[in-house]
Image (cartoon, rainbow, N blue to C red):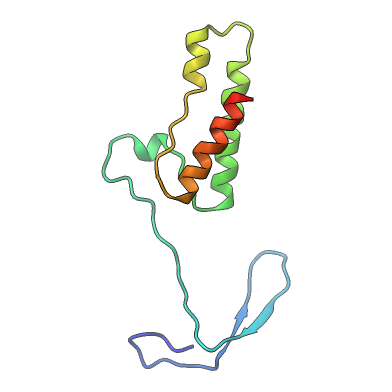
Length: 113
């Protein structure tokens, strides 16, 4: 692997190895780009880190699904006031990219069903 900005190089073959119980595999390549991703940005807004759900990995998606399911379950309790039910079923999606737009659309469909 040739690393940009260095003199390090190796064969043009990479082997994927994982701690998970998946089989190891090799893959030939001409050029390899290793993109390690980005960090979530809170823009320094107080409370975002503690109260927002970020979506980067499958575990984040599962956490969001559980939070939405919990909100619907709480809102369906017979003793809930209409105001509390509205509060529980009020969701905010931040981000106007494809993921944010799809999430908002799916939530809207779910709320109207």
